[in-house]
Image 1 (cartoon, rainbow, N blue to C red):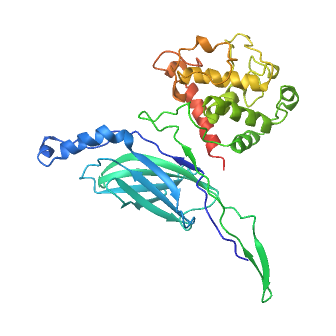
Image 2: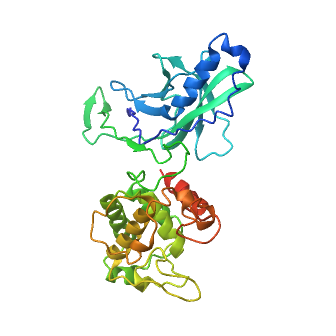
Image 3: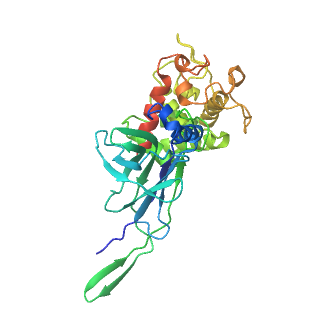
Length: 360
C-alpha cells in the first residue's frame, strides 16, 4: 500500500532586527563607489526585513522560504539560509544559497527529502560579503505535519488492494511575536499556540490537575481550563501563550504551593505581596483568568478593555509600561515598573513559552 504525503506549515515567524554593528561599516573610500549611501539606505529600512515560509500552491510536497530585504548593499554577494531542527540544540543543520526572485527577494526551495514530518524547523537568513563577513538578517520557524485524507477509497485490482489518499487543506498560523525593532516578545497580538499544545505541555509535567476544586469554578479538566484561557485572551487581544506560561509559573503548574490557593481562582498572584498575603479571590475560573488577561493588557497596551473590568488592580498599572514579556520583571523594566519583583521574571516566562511552542 502506498500512502501519499503532504505538509502543513503550522507556524511562520518573521523576526526582524538587524544589528548594523555586525556589518562591516562602509568607510570613507566607499563614498566614491556609492556604497556609503547604500549602507545608509539599508540601515533606514532594516526594520522592513521579512522572512516567511509557505507551501507551493500546486504541490504541497514543496516548501518555499523567502527573505525580503530592502536596499541590501551591492557588495553583499549572496543571501544564505541555515536550516536546523529546533528541538536539536546542537544540530549543525544545512546551508542553502538563496536564488534571487526579484529586486529585493531571495528564495530557497525545500521538498520532502529535505524535511522530516512532525518536526519543527528554524531557518536563519544571512547576507554574505565573503566567508568571514556574514550578517544576520532574520529568521522563520515552521512545523511540518503529515495527515491522511479521510476520503480514502480502496479497490481490489489483480489481487492487490490499493489505497488512494489525497492532500487536505493547509493551515498557517503567523507568529509575529518578536516582529519588532528590539526583537522582544510582545504581549499583545494573536495567539501563536493552540489549545491542544497547552493541554499537552501541561500533561507532560506529570502533575495532578486540581479538577475537584477548579471544577466547582467551571473547569473540571485541563481541557476546560485551557479553552477558557484561550477565549479570554482572544477577547482582549492578549497572546494565549503569555497568559498560559504566566499562570503555570505563578501557580507551579496549578499546584498552588505559594500564598494563593486553588479555591481563590487567582492564577497570577494578583494582590499577593508576600508574607502570607493570599491576594484577591475570584468567583470562578473564567473571572480569575479574565482578571489576569486584563492586567496583562494594562501593562502591555493603552487600549480600552473589550470586556467589563474584573481586575481590581487595573487602574494601579501605568498603562503600556511593559509591552514585552522581557519587561514584566521590575528589575528588567527600563520604565521602572513591572508585574513581579523577582529577577529574570521575563526570561522564566520565555523559557516556558519556548517549551510550549516546541510541542508538536
